[in-house]
Image 1 (cartoon, rainbow, N blue to C red):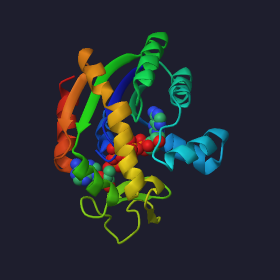
Image 2 (cartoon, rainbow, N blue to C red):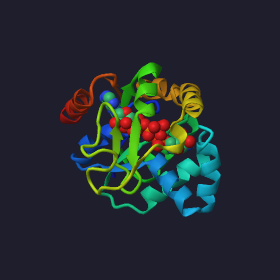
Image 3 (cartoon, rainbow, N blue to C red):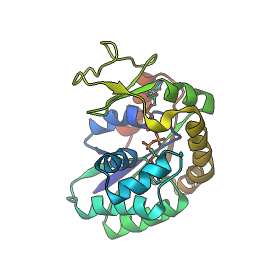
Image 4 (cartoon, rainbow, N blue to C red):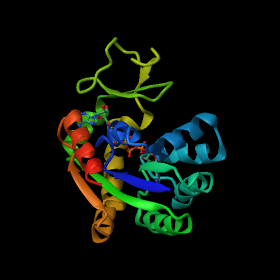
Length: 215
Ligand code: AP5
């Protein structure tokens, strides 16, 4: 198995660049998407996660690590994963190192999307997501072609519950406190590939393509 990590603050564009890596054979695993599905299904994990996500907080490290352990336990050696949103704390990064070892995963690296808080706020406040297939749009930077419906399946576009002002502020603060230390952690391991994510969607995607072609 192979794993590549996408690291970056809320709204930096992790989900938006993922398709470049999917085209290279990676399976996109967004822990946020998995948790939102659990919330919709009203599972015990979903009930716990819903209360935390709605306040801009992280779910416990144990829950996050368990999601990835289950994924690796049930996967074939030939599979390649793009981890979007995991690891998110030093504890998760350390547990991930153990999982990599026990599951014989080749760690392909960490792409860091760097972006200032002002840009994040503008991106997140204009984000619209298809309530059925999860495709992400932006009212200004990546609008749907037909009004307020998804280009792919015609379903309604909605705003994410945790995308409002106060919660977003909290998410950025939690990122700076708990996730930003991973930048140094992976830099020290020579695994970090930083990209300036303040560029346009296509420019950021091209920078990711450049990374992939060089590895
Ligand atoms: P998650 O869903 O992972 O949210 P996030 O990390 O906050 O990231 P986002 O999905 O908000 O942003 P993104 O970087 O993917 O940006 P996007 O591409 O959509 O997690 C949600 C919650 O789940 C967490 O807060 C936490 O509570 C919990 N959780 C998840 N994993 C966890 C873990 N491991 N441990 C503990 N808790 C966990 O782009 C944003 C907008 O900008 C879009 O509208 C897009 O069209 C636009 N855009 C993107 N790129 C550009 C660009 N270059 N130029 C202009 N516009 C752009």
